[in-house]
Amino acid sequence: MRFPKKGQKDTIIFNSKITISNIPDKAYEYIVNGKSAIEWIMERYQVTVDKKSKIKNDPNDWANETGNPRYILDLLLSVINVSLQTVDIVNQLPELNFHGMEASD
Image 1 (cartoon, helix red, strand yellow):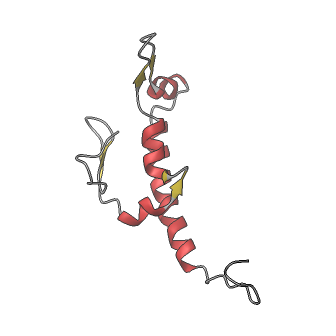
Image 2: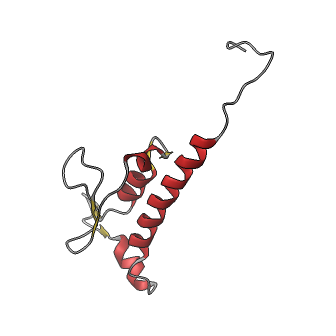
C-alpha cells in the first residue's frame, strides 16, 4: 500500500490491481498513535523483510491462510469509513466549558 506520490493522500494504491480513490482529506484527521488511522494501518500491514535474518513478514500470507484474502483491503476500507464518521461525530460535539475554572487550573 502506498500513495501515488508524496502529499497525494486522496488515493491509495493497494496493489497492482486495486486503487482506492477520492479519499477526503478529513479522513486523515482521525489520529491514532500520532498519525492518521489510515496511515497507521498502511504502515502496520506492509510487507517487510528483516535485514539480518532475511525473514519476510507478509500480512497477506496470514489473510490467505485464514481463508480471507480480502482481510487487509476490507480493514483499510473500514478504517477509512470509521475515520470519516468519527471526525464528523467529533466535529458535531458541543464545546466543552468548565465553569468556575481558570485556564491554568
